[in-house]
Image 1: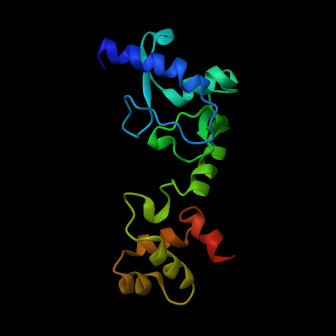
Image 2: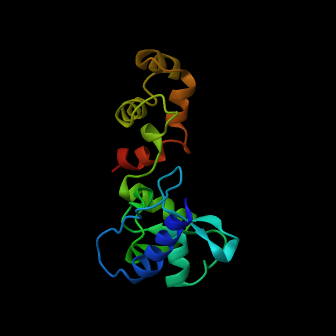
Length: 166
């Protein structure tokens, strides 16, 4: 980021982000990190690159209640660089994870980049638990027995288990 851009970004943060009172998302027009969140070098921290939404949350709501708190987005568009202060609050990691599930921005199950099956296939495999051995079910879906056991386990694919029993 050039010095001129830094000055523009800092000005935008001070004059636009911190004063914006609208309900719509305010998208950061400058640098973003690899996950899509807006970034700005913070002069108070030796010009360390920081997430803009976290800086805004600190300015509006004070310091994080604990090191375990995230600056969470109620809009679900933090990864798209939303920095609207009306959308940002302190939340625990668990609350932030629940928000991601609610917004559909989580990477659980079929959305995970290492997943071998999509959610619909996992639901079908889950519904077959107890009907046949995992080896037979795995062969019929073209996956390994470990994938089937992972879907059946109490820890993995939990979001499907909740849906399946509703």
